[in-house]
Image 1: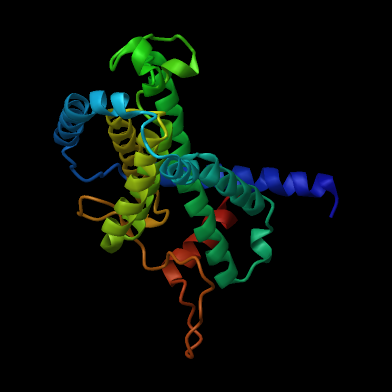
Image 2: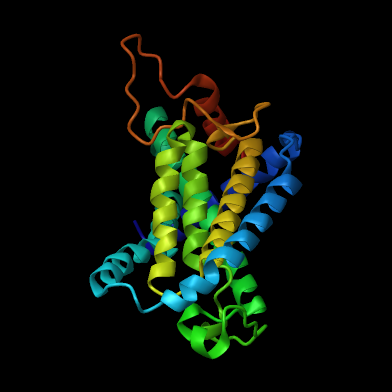
Length: 287
């Protein structure tokens, strides 16, 4: 296939997707569950302040006193807090989906590609938007990192200094982990404690490598979690991955699977007539 043909397919798929999103926004009312955001925000702020008062000064004084082996251990795991681990695969998945000939796929294959595309878009929204927000905040606030505790103390603010030394609050790595936890919480609510333990441990490594104070990580984790939940609510309204229910959090659809669908002996597609038909109808109506 020529480059021009690929370009036309890509452009056509992109236009189809935008048309589908606009149509669903217009057709589906904005019925979001009543989450007490003000209460959660207050709890998040109070927890951050409490951590600041109780732990930040001690963390600043202890920087450099951890054993070299422990620091190397935490430095390895802290790399998993980089947004690139999640944004790059998600972006590549979206590029591949955008170059795919959807109309040439079988019903089950189309459903599988659709689910992977939705997941990639959710990751891009949750991790990408929270990453953008945290960078605006951290450079706007300009808190000095614990590496410079002796020079600047525990609370030294240099707003818009645009210097990495003064980009401590909130933690970007912890924000990414908060977003990842939010995605896992929405997709696998029964295993939330496992996801929280893993992501919180990775977020906490920022303290041991001397890059952030404990309050930086708590603030960043909460920010990432909030953006992920909001992204999930919007996806539920659009019917992507989640369905709209009266529950506090979006509920994953039974048709959302990331493995090939196995058709039952009766020959009826396990993708579901509503969901699979909705995809085909959406893309057909755009032409």
